[in-house]
Length: 182
Image (cartoon, rainbow, N blue to C red; front, side, top):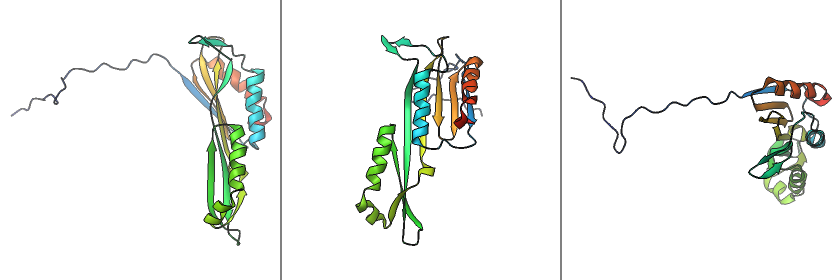
C-alpha cells in the first residue's frame, strides 16, 4: 500500500524557488599578538582612520544624503569592575556595556563611585582594565563603489563584506605599518 503525500492545511505543495548567489563577499581577520593597551589608544587609532582615510575611500550619496568615506557604523565598549573581599578574593563583578567612548568612561566612573552597589555585593570595587573590551565597526566606501567594513577590537582587526582582494591588500598594508596591530 503506497501513501500519497498530502498537502498541509492551508498550503499547496509546489516546488520552492532556490536562492541564487548574487555576490561573493569575503572576510579576513588579523589576531593581534598583544591587545591594544587601553581605550585611549584604541579610540585614537579609530579616529586616525576616519581623519586620515588611509584606505583612500570616497564619499558617496545614499538616499539623497552625503556619506563620508569612512564612518563609525557600530560601536561597543565594555568596562569591567571587580569586587574583592578583605582577603583580596574576587566575590563579584560588573560589566558595563555602552556604545560610545564618552559613555565608557562616564559609566565606569558611576559604577566605581557606587558604594551602595559595593556594599550590596559585599566587597570593594576596582577597575579591571585588562579585561575591558572595545569594538568599532567602520563602514568604508571604496573608490570602486564597493562598501565594506573594518572592525577593530582590542585583540583583532576584521575586514568584512568585501569582494575585491585589493581592498584586503590595502587594509593589510596599512595595518602592517601600525605597531599596535602586529
